[in-house]
Length: 416
Image (cartoon, rainbow, N blue to C red; front, side, top):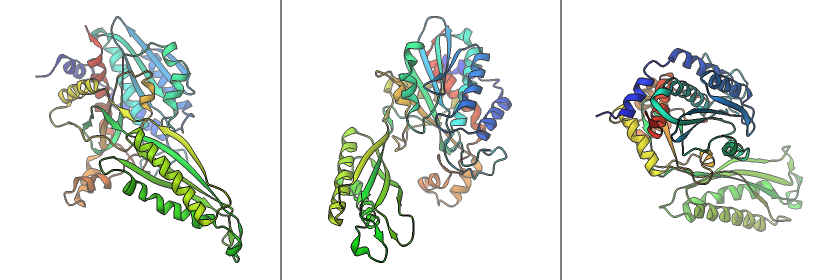
């Protein structure tokens, strides 16, 4: 039996202006903007909120947008969409592909803004059915892990109502039409680390007069591959990726430095500290073995916190999603190794729910399945994922993505 909240959500989203929302998505996709430079996107989003009757402010935490809709006594519910794109050259071949060279909405944030714009309109149009306050955020710089914290530091909860609960969602690979919830841990922490190996440069014909940082860096990279396999318990989840190694300028010059950039993904503070200690130890040990003139420089850089759903909130949202979309559409595939800065908005421990909306077009999913031999994980790995230059969500998810936010918000607001 469908609950009153699910029925109301279906009613409020029964006549969504899908062609207009799809046009908005195409426009946003065609005009991607990098982190902290989302001026056009923020302006468009702010204008839509003003037109829908929200008290609207921009420039929060840089390019952030906040819309407030006060609608009587009741809970304050925050809905968030991130707005930034990635430095990725698009290869989708779509007619609405990015018009900005080297920049692409490869993570679906254009879809997130479209979903939230549609939900903000639907909830404003249906304000006679609920009580409370909506706080709608267009957040910048999620990809760099800075945007949420900057909005909070810029007085988000002093200048606007402090929410009782926060809700957000993310496009993800998988057959379109599924909604993934995990009560508790859902996304991992991420930490960037940079290593500089200090050698002694010289001519390539006289290596005996140098200390080659390239060879030492190669040993470090190889040894780092043992951190997860030999130093982290099998019951723990962790990933270490060396994403960049740079050294030298010419074929016959041994450089004086080599640079290594790596990233670790962890699900507990203890494992993170253990991995950082191992990275420092391995780098120092290899440099000592090579006779480097000084110890390596190891710098811990940008980081993302873990994302841990409030159990009760997430279960409530998952239940209403199951009613809205039907049996078999809501699943729990457990925590993933990806990272988010959404939890930085939960200033002081505010409860939140964060979930995934699968968005792979049916033809792409089926084609991947044909070569996977019935192996679901192999099929999932074969479809373009977030951050891929081929990532292209199904436009058929525009309406359902609006509906997930509307039903989630109504579950948290007070009914009339």
